[in-house]
Image 1 (tube, one colour):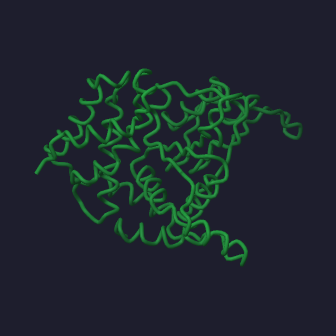
Image 2 (image 1 turned 180 degrees about the vertical axis):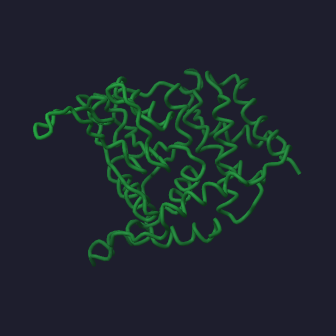
Amino acid sequence: MEGNEFMEKLVGEFSKAVVGKEDVVRLLTVALLSKGHVLLEGVPGVAKTTIAKSFANSIGLSFSRIQLTPDLMPADILGGTYYNQRTSEFQIKKGPIFANVVLADEINRATPKTQSALLEAMQEHQVTIEGNSFHLPEPFFVIATMNPVEHEGVYSLPEAQLDRFMMKIQIGYPNRDEELLFLKRKERGEFNSVDKVVSPDIVSYLISKVSRVRVSEPVLNYIYEIALRTRFDERLLLGASPRASEHLLFSSKALAFLMGREYVIPDDVKELVIPVLSHRLKVKAEYELDGLKVEDIVGEIVEEVEVPK
């Protein structure tokens, strides 16, 4: 199966459960195929959970949802030991982290200790329970959600932890036509659960094909120049890390594959710059007060950097 064929099937199946959001589905697929994790940001009620669950079901992967709260402990996510009276032995019970696609709902409501446990699992693809290490299922893909309007009872993710997410995807309100279609389909009961379009083995095969997508020297230099400009922009307190450059590289390879190409072009990089970089950069306070946003600065930098021929 080729990348463009896979994307077409996925979007078609996805439309059974969600109206629009094709761009979100594509970015989620890019992150999955490039072995990254995603932060979904949006106000309540814009289908963040439905999108994550439908995405997992459509590609035949196991799904787990963790509703994060301040009283949630790391063991509630990773698992722990319990005493089995029947066997008179202590046994290990694995937590909800042991799934292919894990939805960490409202990650900023969890305490820093619990956030760290989740983010360590994301990075290492394994967890330690009572001194025993367990590998997480592959592929392993975390979709974390955040509500941008809540500021009470939340624990902001520090920059070092935000940097572990490959992308931040903004999910806004639907436009007029999309919301009217949503209401009509709801009233008629036309929404259905999605069916599996591929097997987990096919997903693993597609991930291996993405790794063979070629990136030329000029495109590598293009990625580096964009990252470099963010580090020396006077309006930014924090620029893009080398991990950000790495994520931009691998996500561009996945996007090229989904577009049916075996090589990356500058347009792939351009399309992914804002989702990959926006959550890693920090605007200085004086420029924030003037209404300047990270997306505006990144857009300017992309326009300034010479595009390779």
